[in-house]
Image 1 (cartoon, chains in turn brown, red):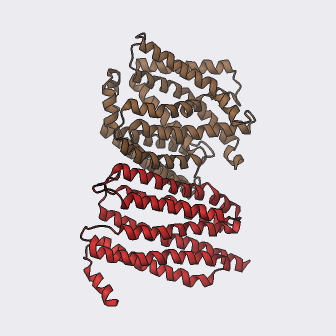
Image 2 (cartoon, rainbow over the protein chains, first blue to last red):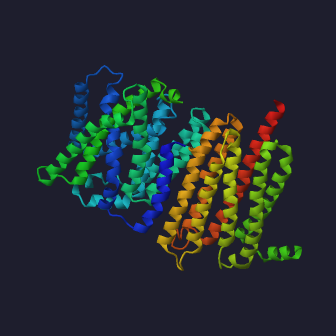
Image 3 (tube, helix red, strand yellow):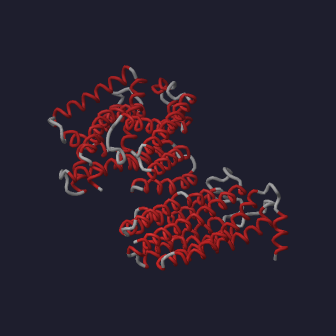
Length: 310
Length: 253
């Protein structure tokens, strides 16, 4: 059991019963509770993409930033022209990214079966999150007209089928990997347990709190740990303080950028709801981040990072 | 005595599956206690205490299951209540003893007495808080009471979980240089992670509890009985396996 898994189990066991005392928590309330954790851990885990990508690549910092911004711009354009396609793309790449970070310490290569497992795992948890909280999601989205285009994506029956198939295939894939000795039996048990716990927390908790628990602890915290240990091994940073210093500039820049966009909405310069805008921002910073992380994990496998560590 | 037992058996309805598991639990625990006591003579001296503790755990549980079976026959089957008091007395004695097993197994790698006391205190804390939460729940059930004592109890559980998976016990097992001990301690850690998880679920099903209404009180007793049998006998069997495998290895060496 890793530290992240322990923290996740402890958080679920302690927070879930407490939520029953507070009763229903409104969406703004959920955002207030979740925001500090997302700001402190969620955003920073993608704030050193430049450092991670440039390492081992013959690319200048300025070129990297230019390409990064270009991907963001293309994504925003996609949101303007084909919002449904942009939304589905966002969900699919997020699913793959979540799966990739979940299994990064098991897989030593990125063969098709591993990549499929990553994707299926991510689709399984994201469809569970949507399916189990569909009423809450639809209620929130119904307040803003922009979200109405996503109604076909949030079809209960379709989501149920996607959830059922992806979960079944994820489990089959994990069993197959165990049978072919790519995964230890204990790892299989742990992954099944974690998947079940994620489902339970998504089912029983309010949507944003449930997702934040997963995103911050099992995803961001783990990725930050990998980034820190990798850079330390590469003698890029010497201490945790140095690592935090490395994370700070782009984290602050991200908050500042978001602040500017929200200010534009506030002063009616940008005609868009905060929620819809937040979705586009998250999707736009996720897309290039996923490419960077894909390369980062390839680098980890190439340098036998997990074997070296042990 | 025999007549008394037979009378109790005949009082159990044929479809009283909960009563059936009380009876099965009683016999299984008693049989396991006898087994561990007899098998003590087959293992090396350093494992004898571990097997004695396994016998004590199942023996104490057998006695309590005897009482609980009678209690169930008298009050439980008619829906007048679960044997909460007996359960907690049983757990308060046997769960710290399970924690003692972790100390005994890792003693070969240098476990200190402080580890033993920390685990005993954490397990006792977990059970006392759980008992207050369950037994002193106001009539009709109070969510705040149930949650407060449940959360406090969970802190004790989390301490044990951390210690056996990531903390002192895990590190000592790793340092033991014995694959048998490493594997055995890890298996016991799985019991703590999965096997013990059934108890908070049962706790949350009480009146005012967070999962109240999800399962009937009768079903909760059924879960407890099955979980107790698996956890206590299973725990003992893992310890037995460590002791017997290690002893066999020493003999052949």
